[in-house]
Length: 103
Image (cartoon, rainbow, N blue to C red; front, side):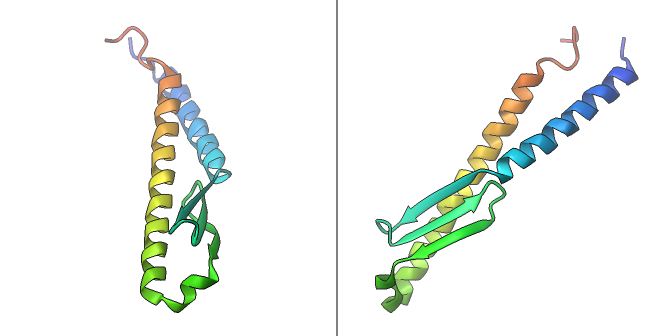
């Protein structure tokens, strides 16, 4: 039989786990390099840029710099998204079957 009290507890637990996961992700740092290290970009787990290093040699070629920045930003965003997905799947996997004997 379906128990609303247990469902409420389960939802509270899921919310707590989601908040914990969000905090853990925010504390992670991902660094990508483009152009053999001419551009280095670091983002946190929320996808916020926290550091950007640009080699001086790229400053004379605006087109190259733009391409390197776009590549680094896209790579960093992919890393963050993949980690968020893996972390969320891990969290769901740790919950087991929330419906007990229901199949």
